[in-house]
Image 1 (cartoon, rainbow, N blue to C red):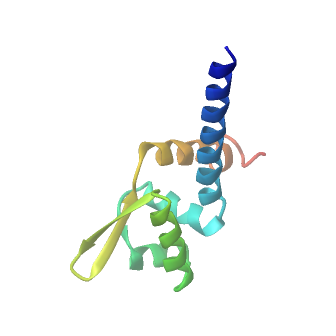
Image 2: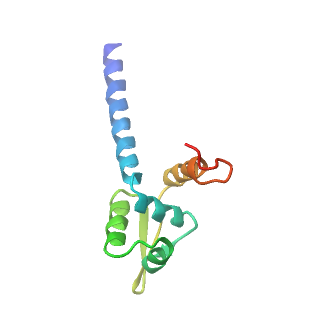
Length: 110
């Protein structure tokens, strides 16, 4: 029984670490804005700059963080790089955040 509890504890610790890293990746206003726009579909860097008002080099820096963390995927077409959301987990979290903070139904309550 103690061995099973130790394994469960290690698994729980690893899961908590993974969740913590995921939340740290989201815990930035600019990154959240980029991800929110990407929920509408793929976009190139120029489009994201125009949509969010985030200027270079900050835009590239935040896209780099999202890419390294596996939250977005790039696709190169000619000279343009297009980005899209990389997983359903990211979409699900953004949908929940939208319901909590952005939808008309919530009235932006906290």
